[in-house]
Length: 299
Length: 166
Image (tube, rainbow over all chains, first blue to last red; front, side):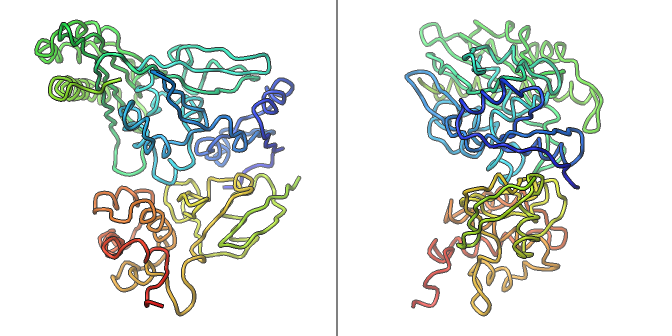
């Protein structure tokens, strides 16, 4: 599988990278880890004439917590994320999801930014980040824009990035209420596989009223982009944990109704809907029970 | 249009002229003659091309050589030497974990990365770690046994030092 020749550049700072993109952005493809891009180039589905490797732009490689916000640089690898203290303690649902991406070899190179910018409808990092109402920072040589992740995905493989922009970082607010979340991924086999369906279920409990202050259900692999099942969330929000457990079946149905899956080489639309229904119930039960028993994560 | 990269391979520093469209596995095999690292699927899914990049196990067939510029690579040739096999190599041979041998270099490299990260893994952790290394011959059982046999013996052995007490 030969890769066609291309012009290669490796800027050593974000500023240098953005200057290049300002001038030549529409001819330039960005290379982060490369686990998606290099594969596409080998399969000739992408034929860039110019590739900008970002591996020397160290400013994009960070994971930090500032008060109640977690900031993740676009070049943070999945293996770093799933071993990082801040992610393990504060955003375990995200760590759980990225630990399921590919194989260890892939997770050691593949980046969070790359996963989002590749914009597969089944990207594993997307449902947890959507459920947490994450924001993205898009940078070009004129400055930075912050936007909700929900506005970033425009279609399969399409994002809101302009040719002169780079995804710089992802910002996640740590909830102030006790919270719990989980990510379930349906694959055809163990080992390396894309998600046929991914379900992220995140809930927060209001300690004074003991009701669910927030419920977020995000789905991957069942629509042109990763999505939130807002009607399903409304069924559960504000309920006590017992009421919510009883209402899970209805919420699961509502989640299924919101999906628009397709038949593809991995699964049929019918199968995907069936899995969404099961996973929303399973993930919901796991999360609600963990909020009741252990009191969930605390800020 | 070639570009020059500096890359340390098995402890030796090289300055190499590479084409940007060449993969790390091709540079290791064809420019450096290190044919221990194998090419299987070419898609980063079978793990036969696994090498260590700054200590991390990676699939070298989906890395461009230029991505390894300024970094350290360890291939299977960096393990043990003729007549003095690395403890992992010895364990694989003794436990019957090698049949055709094609997956073996990648398996051993991944195993080393695992044991350096986690000197006492259990079977579940071992299987998850080698999930990116496919074997069509052995059914994995003896590979897992070989790796677990070193988990009991402490992390010094993984570094290949002082096995005979010297």
